[in-house]
Length: 64
Figure (cartoon, one colour):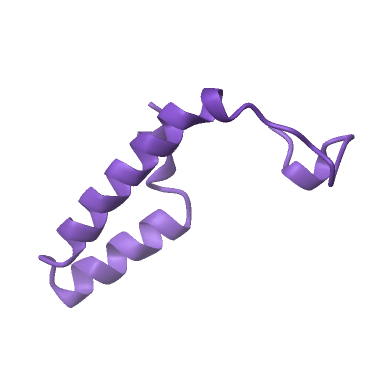
């Protein structure tokens, strides 16, 4: 997949909001779960999870 700035129509690209709506809703739901869960973790576990998510370790779950 190309980055948005690598697309031929950058920066005037278009998207179909209807096609993205279900993914956006899923992302928002899962984000809420992660935020709620992180509040119950210890400092070391919270740091480890943060690093995992920031480096893409959590991205596979979202794509599945």
